[in-house]
Amino acid sequence: RYRDGRLDELWLDHDLGGDDTIWPVVEVLEQAAFDDRPFNIGVVVVHSANPGGAARIALGLRRWGYRVRVASGCSDVGYDKGPPAS
Image (tube, rainbow, N blue to C red):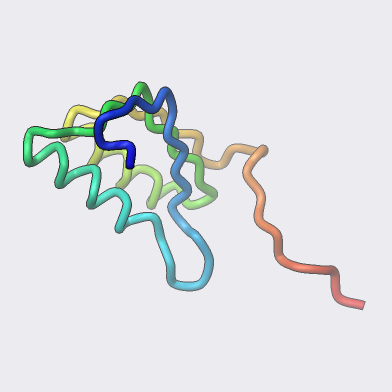
């Protein structure tokens, strides 16, 4: 749905919970660039408490010409671990 539009910012978090990661989305972005139809994104902001995963995302997307900013270990990033144990 955003193919022909512009996104000023796209925020990605590496770990989505359980075994899920953002990699399927990253692969779509990479494939679009490979096909000479990259998404029109001002900046991709990778925020993650997983520095290795964030670095891999940034490296991959930069390779395809996307502008990427990494906010690994950002204190504003948190995870809801559910209610505290009683």
